[in-house]
Length: 134
Image 1: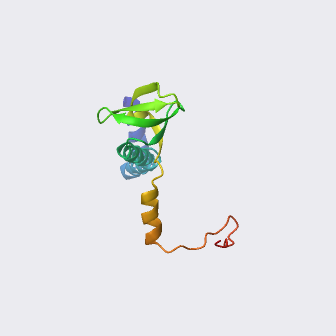
Image 2 (image 1 turned 90 degrees about the vertical axis):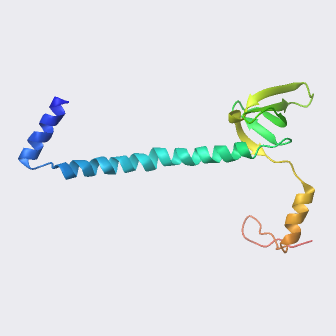
Image 3 (image 1 turned 180 degrees about the vertical axis):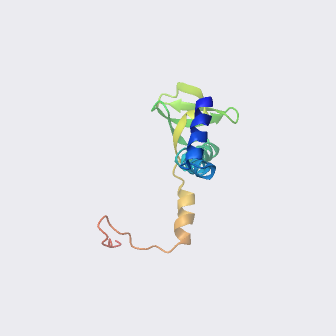
């Protein structure tokens, strides 16, 4: 610490570095660290929280280990029971934080309500041409 303060006092005496310049560098470096590390991490945590809050029974999920399953029960706010495979014998309790992706099951009633509210427009194909309605 004495070496650092000695360098600062020598630089200040020489007139090359002043306290406002040093403080300016500290502020710029702090802002850079905030926008490169802290802010993206908060955004990712917010997305993860929304994902955990949207979990419902019947949702298809993918775990951090890469296993696909279906949520069959909620034990408490942090633990769910996921069923893997089609034999109905592999039911594993796991933490919600181990879920990476959630896919909601198709609900035809909900889809019918959404499509009836908006007029149907011709869909565009991959290259921007309108597909004909048949």
